[in-house]
Amino acid sequence: MPPRLNVFALPQFADPKELVDGVVVVIDVLRASTTIIYALEAGANEVIPCREVAEARSIAQDFFPEEVVLGGERDGVHIEGFDLGNSPEEYEPHLVGGKTIVFTTTNGTQALLHAKNAKQIYIGAFVNVSAVVQKLLGEDKIHLLCAGTEGQFSEDDILFAGMLTERLSRQGGMPYELNAQAITAREMWLHQFALPQALGAEPLEPERLAKQLQQSLGGKNLMALGLEDDILAAAHVDDFAIDDERMPMRVHSRRFGAFVVALAVEFFDVQILRVAVERGKSPSHVLIVAGDDEREARQRDAGSVEAGRAVRTRRI
Image 1 (spheres, rainbow, N blue to C red):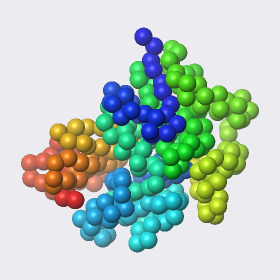
Image 2 (cartoon, rainbow, N blue to C red):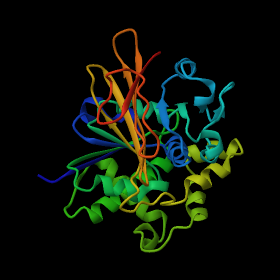
Image 3 (tube, rainbow, N blue to C red):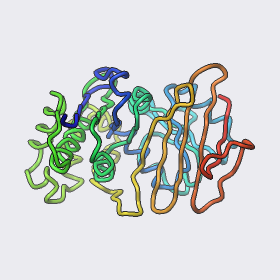
């Protein structure tokens, strides 16, 4: 039976039950996926995705002020009282290095939570495309979940899904069974650029890709807000390329009897993060499993160490 690759242009097109036994790539090019990757590259220890603004504020209050950064947006605009918005280049090392980011956005974190029961979840964007491809090769059921923009298709996400579909189809070693949206996304990608660029044989200049992203619904919204620099920041293909020692950010689901979303990132030899956000019986908690090859893991709860990583339970 051939491996299966589905594209869902919007989260509501994907039945959460269908995602359970597959690997999901959550795509919000403009901007949550790109911003999360930038933040972790800048040295953030942890990212906790939240559905609601009030939830994010509540979780942030459980940290010491010097430990946490509130980040996100609503309708593209910086949330009042938050430290940072959703612009990738805001997340600089001197602002987020060594800190927890509590993060909520209009579209991206909602898509991430839609995929909460998947076997494994990755965050995908143009800036880490090769890393994502390498992690997906060999998987027999892949779902590319586009966040869209306020319930509408956004070409930026679909273009990236098409790029992933093309690369996986070419490098996977055997043909994938594609759904109709995957076929459409791949054709869209192949027809937007000269064939050598679309196939990766020649570099795709950020300015060229950014110009195309500006035409998407998400891109037009950012242009109207004067945030064209964010589009360019998202258009650097493989800005965070990998080698044998540098791994891509990965998000994977684990179950502790209730809904748990776990995020992990490895850059170079540093295991920066593993976060689990639990929703279930009252009271709710945030379980954070933190490990680092360079810094000693801190044990916050006696007896809660797993594989050398400290486990912290925070009431929300």
